[in-house]
Amino acid sequence: MTVSLTRRRWALFALFFVPGLSLASWVTRTPAIRDLLHASTAQMGLVLFGLSVGSMLGILCSGALVAKFGGRPVIAAGIAGVALSMPVIGLGAGAGAAWVVAAGLFVFGLGLGAADVAMNVEGADVERAGRRPFLPALHGCFSLGTVVGALVGIGATATGFPVVWHLVITGALGAGVFGAAIRSVLPGTGRVPRLRADGSRGNAAAPQIWKDTRLVLIGVIVLAMALTEGTANDWLPLIMVDGHGFGEAWGSAIFAVFAASMTLGRFAGGPVIARLGRALVLGISAGFALLGLVVVAFVDSQFTAVAAVVLWGLGASLGFPVALSAAGDSGPNPAMRVSLVATIGYIAFLVGPPLLGFIGEQVGLRHALVIPMIVVLVAIFLSPAVRNRPVVECQRLADEPVAPTRL
Image 1 (cartoon, rainbow, N blue to C red):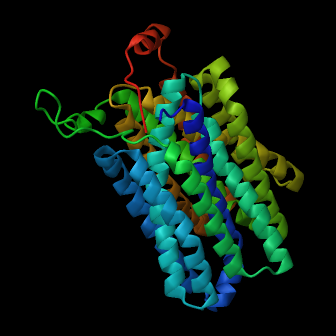
Image 2: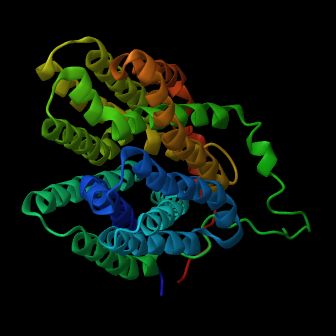
Image 3: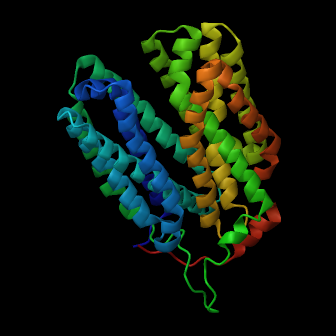
């Protein structure tokens, strides 16, 4: 049967929601998991290392796998891994087996890294087919998942609900959503044929992508905005506790405010981008993020710091999806372009925050925010690189025949 764009959109919304829900579910139970494992801070660091290794491996392999097999099998394997990892982490914690928890986190990271890149390739294809912004709302579903997962996790912690059952239920829910949604993801999106009709290799143009100046600039923007978002994901509660004197509960609550601001910005961003264009919206939103970072770093006021976190979240919300949309629109072989830029962004998510932690150890976390300030300023300067295609070129693409797609 023919798969409509509406079905493809809703399937991707659901598939993006699952990793966000799963991520927040286990993160909010980290203190309880540590207690069940009787682990020290250093031992928990080793357990969490499984997540880093799995994520990096998934990210680095995803682009090549999508080019060879298409996005659908990579998404299927990745989201299935995310759902499977939840009960593994929970059961490992319940059994006091740190190595099982580390293995579950490895599977989670591997699935998340692989699926995210592939889903962004699929999402960029849906956006081009629909000829209207889609990626901001798609990433908004991930943020919405983190908000829902955080609220459920806080409730489970407050009521003493067992970690094992919490994560088993989360995994079962994720598996159910995955089973219902994956059928509406088209096969073959992003696949690069090994041989063209003239006998040349379909992936021969891959090295040429790096020579595209506009794509390189978009990659720098993605790196900058991913670092800005990742800084908050990893360090915002500690910045609020150690830097602004909030209690631990308030630090977690302020992170929830950041996640809610990200969600709002992403869901509201599509119509704004359609009216004003990608470059202007990216420049303004990055300016909001810069203002929020400056206030959090240099103004000694708790009330002002919370207001600045809202600006930080709204400003960071559109950088990643807008840049991915521009990458897919920057030239031939859009799937490979989106895959390349998404990989740059996810590497920044993984490498940037630990680097910031090292610097923060020397100068304090608030002063370490100068690093994301600098890169956001670079993103503002480079924002014209994400401008929309000229109308004439868009019309040419619209007039090209499109083969019907069937599932």
